[in-house]
Length: 206
Image 1 (tube, rainbow, N blue to C red):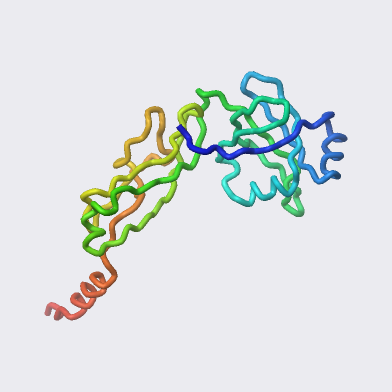
Image 2: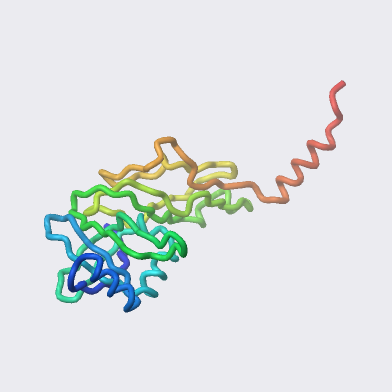
């Protein structure tokens, strides 16, 4: 299961329609709504600076949040749309969707590398080059892995780790179909430079 799901704090918006939304914006609030999950839609307000910081943190549309609203049960949500001012690009409305445990969503899951001390390639001076520190996966909302684990034990210089080398939780699959690279054990720079010098020193064939 997921580790710490970030909170998204909001308050209930009284009134609906354009008038209530304009009033919220005048008060430095961003109106929004949460829907789905077998419950009625709930109008919300978000503090402007708080929401802007969340948006600037990145991947707002692919992050699972724990929505906290006073007087309401916490619920897992994902953002479905961020409406922005056409001139300034600042948020003017947020659409959130409640998730059931059986809902499928795309999320970025971090990759953790273990057993560095048992990695032959690293012992010989190689470098772990991480291509993807996180991987986008299609997951069940009720079965979100906290992380993907890559075991470096026994890997040699030149070895490449692809997504197929990682055992994914049942019901989880990458959003990219090809067997893409997660990381590799690259040779020490001195060794690469020495090999390049050796190639340049070889006489050309006549």
